[in-house]
Length: 201
Ligand code: PNS
Image (cartoon, rainbow, N blue to C red; front, side):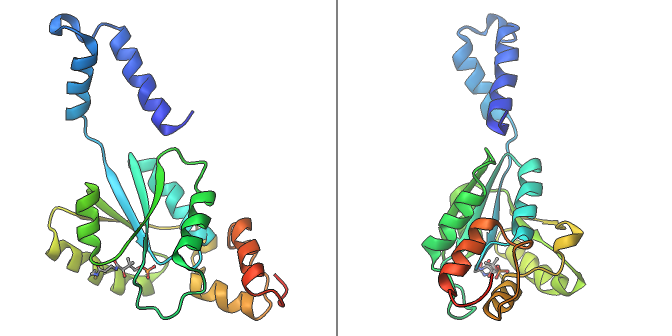
């Protein structure tokens, strides 16, 4: 049962039990109740060039604790020429996250806090793999807090087996003929093979 279906199930139980009593029609009262329910939407931003199993692990963890998770690809990254176009990255993430009922994929440019505000998101999700990630992530979180004190940053750690995995290393290793099949989703391996056809995947 998907996350959304589970929530629908909750509503049905309560409406069937007559919780709305003398308030009149249950539909209107149900909507009143849902309006005051606390739902949390979070943004998981990044360049995702390409998506790795570490990213996917974090998406799975995030999707368990928030109601809605938006994976947001930065369009105007300053990381140099990307291997995959933004639409290609969007497609890969969309396919790899199909199984999650509460995960969507979007793109953005400009300030992350502005995008989060437009989306009505309360939090930004970021992964910390090792101490070396901490300083950069801390600076970003503090800057985002300065820009929007209402927006919280949630840090989560991926599974240990992915702590050394990064998109940059995946591209480098694959381009030199290394095997990355355990480190990225199979559809990403296929896309890598199509981009770098003469190397062993
Ligand atoms: O995958 P990355 O490169 O670690 O993701 C970095 C990202 C996209 C989260 C960061 O560069 C970002 O939020 N850029 C948007 C511009 C912005 O808001 N800058 C101010 C925050 S320091």
